[in-house]
Amino acid sequence: LFVMEQGGRIKILDRTTGAELGTFLTLTGITSGGERGLLGLAFDPQYDSNGRFYIYYTDADGAITIARLLVSPTNPNVADPASQTLLVSIPHPTFTNHNGGMIAFGSDGCLYAGIGDGGGAGDPNNHAQNLTSRLGKLLRIDPATGTACTTGTLNPFVLSGGHPLVWSYGLRNPWRFSFDSLTGDLIIADVGQNAWEEVNAQSASSTGGQNYGWPCYEGMHSSG
Image (cartoon, rainbow, N blue to C red; front, side, top):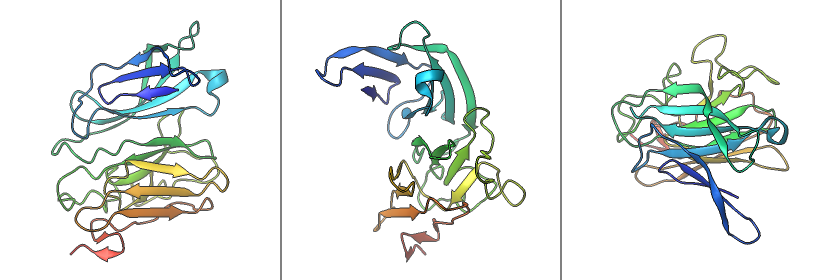
């Protein structure tokens, strides 16, 4: 069992006894505290054979960072920190909150990432509705290259009108989401601002491009 700590450590516990087996990774060069730090961890679907895993954190400048690392070739309980490869970096310069943090693989083999709107009340910079910004979005990433994933379908804005990594938009701080293990449907938990928390359901057959409304709507209710 891998236990991720916001301050930058990932520990391993024995699932049967609960005994600590050691520290898998100690990440340096991050900003931690409040809503920042080491926020997400995902193992490649082929982890048993390729040893790849992915982390989501805020770097020393507060930028949202998604990186790929490898497990040690000689010890399965230790990662190789020197193997880190940067895939995505998103500046987050003004506010410290709304950093998102969730990464997970879909059944298509693409890496999905929930990115907060950049913080501040009411999305003051209108990131969530700006298709050229990666903030306030769900991204769909090729885990090998950090570019737009092309498995099954193209991301909806690859050819025109927005950033190629954007899969869906209009989100406030989608810091946790989950793929249904039976249907592949995507469930996104998005943090409300004043009165309404939000849960969004996206069918496994979706080709992306959904607008979940923030900051114009909080849930299904006008925020203006």
